[in-house]
Image (tube, rainbow, N blue to C red; front, side):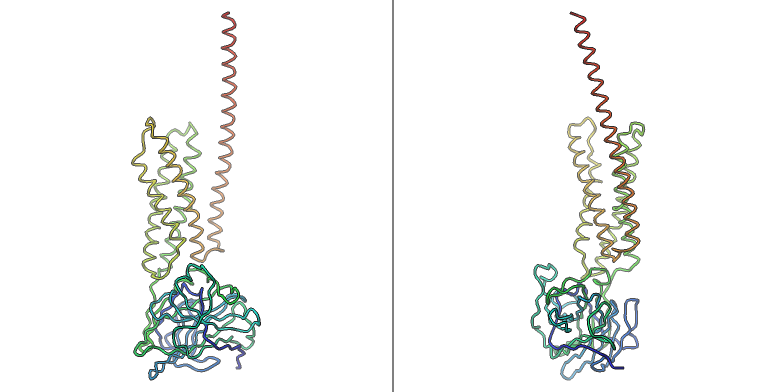
Amino acid sequence: MRQQRRHVTGGTLLGSLLQFVVTVAFVPAAAAAGGAAAGRCTTSTALKTYAKCIALPTQGATLAWTYDARNATLDAAFTGSFISPSGWVAWGVNKDAPAMTGARVLAAFSDPTTGALLALPFLLSPDVKLQASPLVSRPLDITLLASSASLVGPTARTVRDGATVTIAATIRLNPNRTKLYFVWNRGLYVQGYSPTIHPTDASDLASHATVDILTTATEASPTASATLQWTHGSLNAISWGLLLPVGAAVARYLRPCASTGPAWFYAHAAIQAMGYTLGAAGFALGIVMGSASPGVTYKLHRGLGIAAATAGSLQTLAMLFRPKTTNRYRKYWKSYHHLVGYGCVVVGVVNVFQGFEVMGLGASYWKLGYCMALATLAGGCVALEVNAWVVFCRRQQEEKLMRREVEDVVVKDRAAAF
């Protein structure tokens, strides 16, 4: 079968590419199948046939290679797929560590002027994560002897969603150094000739592996298990995302009801204590997951989680220093308690939504169910808030009428006395 392809030579590496680092130890083709996210590898490509291949752990990507020990040359072909007609696919090497920062990569995408498939080199400096400026192609500081990119398939003429691309490169390695760190990823958009940041789903941030091209030993990068991720997400959604807002609503709307007596306080304290306990457990699981996944970071999610946990802990400790109702500092304590409490609720809810994005559930029924539950709670709070203001206004009006009646009686009594 003849494969139609578009070919471009020239060193090319990607920039916004990977928060995904793959250190892959090469294994024989027969042993390379594995994992739901892995593809089926082949040693034959449109350009040549390689000695070995491996199915990479994410994105259905594969890698084929031939290593010539005599001149320390690695001839490799990475195969991945586009997720957008205007997107990019990148693959490269980090000679220092299994990380995005410091990687030398080749990025394949359509030329915005001609539509031809390009393969450009990029050096991923520490500034890439900050996204302070567009990623600019530059010559690599490694010995790249040849590079190319080509679309794969009998009808592959243009980049489209799901199109398969092969990025081939010939690299001269340092003598006696055969342990390599590979990185790859893909993104939705290219601005001019600058790849933009890739998606940050779990599968886009957790591809790590280490490659020893002589022993073919594979060291999979440690990642948190799916069970641990779901447990972490469930605990935090229930605690920070639901229980704490419910507890705050109980204190807000049941306290003015004289018929409830002190019951509102015990209900508020019980709900908040349960929410904080579950939230602390979820936070601890997050720390465990972070330790189990070196190189994978979610700065915003982590920062919001720390802020919510800190506010929750301050609220708990504040109960130990709660002044009596007759204490003159009681009003200041109440202001602090309300400010930190509502802040904790807001940050917790926002972080739950951030968690959905991290787990790749931004458009899932799980998020829809949570939104419906939160909307129900918010709707109830709005109704109770309106009712509270109506009751407050009525009481103010009644008190005003009563004061007028008292004043009228006093005036009549004084007039009768004269």
